[in-house]
Image (cartoon, rainbow, N blue to C red; front, side, top):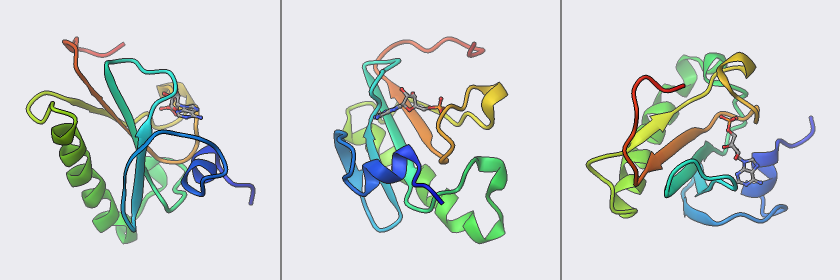
Length: 113
Ligand code: AMP
């Protein structure tokens, strides 16, 4: 299987501004930010999309949520941030390696477009 774009970033084969990493996940700044803070949090495991995760991924998914919260706090926006997961092309997913968008630093509208 060819590596996903995000696997290449995780493996340092492509450049990115990495802001956090641990044994389970890596976070880096989005190349086309939609907010003053726009970070992508990616599991090292190349799950294609959230709907492909299963019970074996439960702890990993929980870990991602807690890490996202810590990253938002580290960026100075621990009390006001948005997490987005685009699941599937029709929902806006363009990179098919599960990732959480962490967005902060501007007012957020609801509902998202
Ligand atoms: P999604 O559309 O939910 O799959 O999100 C993919 C995100 O990856 C988009 O916000 C892109 O701007 C971002 N992106 C694409 N290529 C790169 C890259 N090389 N480095 C950082 N972010 C990227």
